[in-house]
Image (cartoon, rainbow, N blue to C red):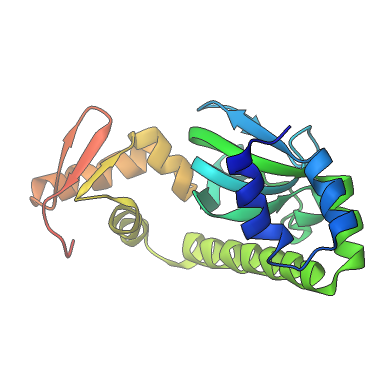
Length: 215
């Protein structure tokens, strides 16, 4: 059963937003659950966490895995974000499924996929929202793949650090950064070492500090 807080979030972010009828709202209330996922857990598109999620807290990283088992980040979900986690959200153009990893402990509200499908088929606004989400995720994937194919790795490393640092600091290992960018750890480490030599960054175990805001 949802808490009063979670019910209000569900009202604000879904029920009232799409003007769901009282009858259908009751079905959603009865089926929706609060999910708590620990850092390091993985979510696949066909597991028990499949459905429409509203992220209350935490960070999820969506990635695809190449045939040589290299990972590349497609998008991230953080507090306030929502997404459709199911096979219909797969990007078949890449002939692979999206996996989500829990980067920081996550608490989210989940509407199970079958209930979401029923609601989606009854409300054009929900269908349009779902299509918009999938379109945005696909566009993000295309952008990431274009960068991976055409942008120099050094530019991608710098852009990632700039976009993901907070107060000039980011907690990340070389291996994790390489996974985000779909590159080899050795190549990323060489770039970071050169950046450190040029005084653009400093490093401590598991943390990178930006010393030059322009990089």
